[in-house]
Length: 162
Length: 45
Image (cartoon, rainbow over all chains, first blue to last red; front, side, top):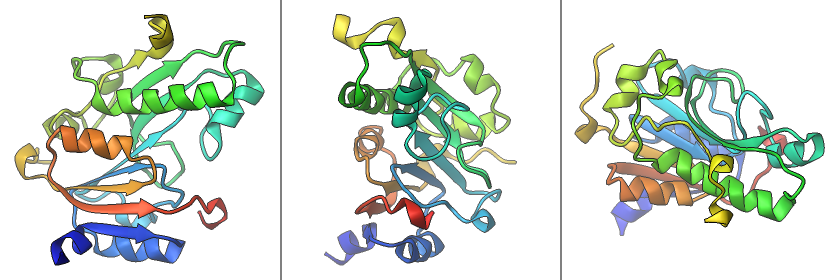
């Protein structure tokens, strides 16, 4: 019971998050759906901070990228990237694109986005894509089991058409 | 920078979309910390 309590933490406020990040034990942090920004003092060291963002970066950084895609007609998707001191600007590890079409509405795009995020983090494809080739910390990423991922496009083979 | 041994890397997850955590578990990563965000108070970024 004590072990489980140590493993799992519920964050309700930014202060909760700051306390957690100060004491959590990890080499690699994977963030997905976390509204808080990791303080810069933790970045740039030996530990890796990875974020999975529901857009095809560098487009639609920040909050509400899905609404941004619908409002502006930009392609959507998911990007797995290293964190840096800014928001959604770190080195890109893997991306999945969802081309914008007039058929997309908010619920449909949200479902596709969740699929893209999952694809972004779970692809078993080769890591020899151009995306991973741009990564200056490639040697570190390639050492992580099943990481880095490759780049792909959901729109190239729509899941709803198969 | 030395390349870490993948079998000894400790992973943590933070967020609210747990399908990614599920993928990390499937990949048999060594997960040592999980922080679940209850909501998205964007004003606190």
